Image 1 (cartoon, each protein chain N blue to C red):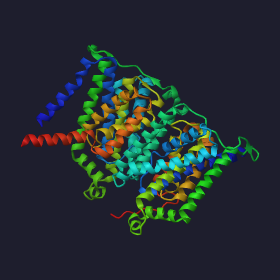
Image 2 (cartoon, chains in turn orange, yellow; image 1 turned 90 degrees about the horizontal axis):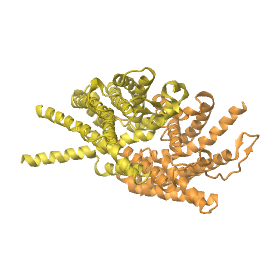
Image 3 (cartoon, rainbow over the protein chains, first blue to last red; image 1 turned 60 degrees about the vertical axis):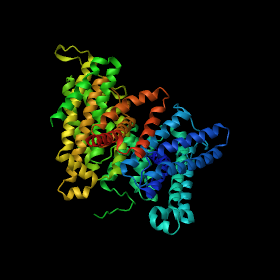
Image 4 (spheres, rainbow over the protein chains, first blue to last red; image 1 turned 180 degrees about the vertical axis):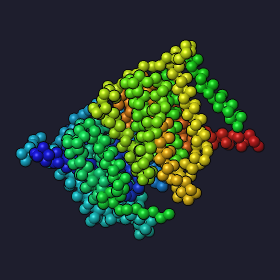
Length: 289
Length: 317
């Protein structure tokens, strides 16, 4: 029983990371109806930036915020340079550009920071809490993820800019008519998604160690989470991310073994898409023929 | 009609020349070009002509390769007999994957196949199948010698064998895509609703296209396994699937001839780029992908075809 509870708790901890990547995916999907295949790679790159800043001698949290800010700027630049021209292109074109972006970011990461596996520090004390159920890092990273998710929620709900961004995603034409700069809102969304990715990267790196392909598995779980919750619902994506984390941990421990964890993500994706394509909280899309 | 046959025979003869000119490693590279050509051809029928985007064709390539390796290793099946078996297996798997794929629009299909590509090495490594697949170690298989005492060495015979199979597959593919079914496939890609109104059974056509596409890529995997004489889970990572996708886009998604351009591209460009840095092949692929999407959406094949058309028009005047 104790092992079971422990599995659930560490599932929630990793689920938080999936939840933030899933949220980043959904934010871009809502605004542009594109799925960013490079989200994981971008997050890995941000994590390397954080590590570089730490190696310069900056304190952890300064590096953390620095990487957040740099990722935001990089995200905005990528949207402006690469995504703007293909905004209304066919799906094959946008998938091509995203896969290209994935390859470029991945090899740039390898080029700059080397392919060796690196350790990444955790800002939280390395000791077991609450009678060994939770490690310091698990608790800390869950808290950080929750703070990020909550502030994103507050930002979208209670600020003028957040409202404008939601409007731009929901109905670009009308938003433009009332004076929202839709193009910049999309770029801001990209920046935010990249910045959230950097948080997820920094939180997961101490657990899985840092190498250029660190996020490829995590991206898959985030996809699964986003689909499970409904790809056009941010709240759904967050819940879906947490659920996938728990499912993955329990499945890995009791059902399929750790070797087939990625296959579990595939199974979740296929199950959701065949049984309930709109996800748990997503809107059903009806198309008129 | 007659001239087109002459051209085909001419191309085949031209393609057979390398047996005389190259040897060893270079001939092996040519063999791999042919193998990748067939693999990309499978992808082109699905993605280019039928409009279903797959980022996971490396999985079918892997299944084909493993079918051949296991048959040769555990049951001593002769190498040429593994091809039809692997074709049937891959077509079956493709059909099954195609069933849920029916429900998925372009983007979701790309996502699901991407997930399949990420997951496949894990499945191949799993201890449940270890007796057959050899686990992480993979399987080593014997390279075939030329039969009937033909005066070729192993590399030459492998090249000719692969080329022969590929020529048959290409002719079949051209016939398929230029006929009634090919038109139906294009119609589904361009306007699914209109195609359905014309009496095309959407579900049947899409799943069958998926099966044929998986079969082609699977047979390519078998040929590749025979040529490399070795299979291991980690050679079928998600990067392989992405490589096929890059080859498809570089050659031109909907062009049959372009698949060869794409195959040449993915065989030789990484080798050249590797000399610069370990990171360079990925970067080159990425830059090429994005550049193609922006500048040459029809791919190199479509671009050359357009050039050809223009020259013919000029010559006709």
